[in-house]
Image (cartoon, one colour):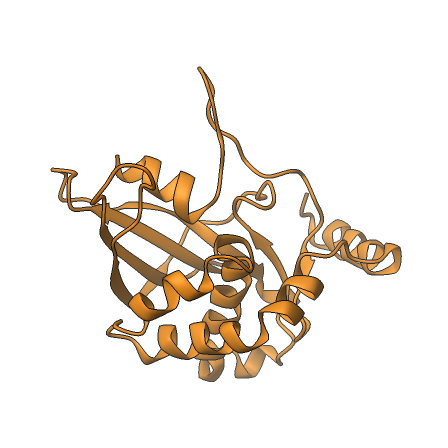
Length: 204
């Protein structure tokens, strides 16, 4: 049940009988208003990422509507910030009250290649909070879109994390711009640059 709530409600994937939940379409990276080239699970088919070597909890909160149409199917949503050799990764986890498992169902929510972060690499560590916030906001463009912000925001405001609260407040105030720019198709020139960088770095 945790996996169903994660994929159906948080990652906005649809299920196909006998095939499970479908990934998003194969699309180029999205470009956020601040110049990050990100991939968003559920919106895009994600490229493979490297093994996560460091993982930091960002915070969690209770959400009462993780399985719409099934009554009181609430539970906990938590977010974590992961670091690999080549990427920064946002992990989302879900644990329903009605699921007896003690484990969260976890998956990548969004990620960015380190070389697509518009901050000097020497300053990445001091800006981990900003990078994590950018991945959260990119994830919200797909998870919340325009319709679910008002229902979701009061519960995230009860979070134990200032970073999560700041991200949802920023998104609530700027969602039209965030969605319009992040989920648009990047230009041919931007795609050419991305493809050339991928070739140089041996990425698919």
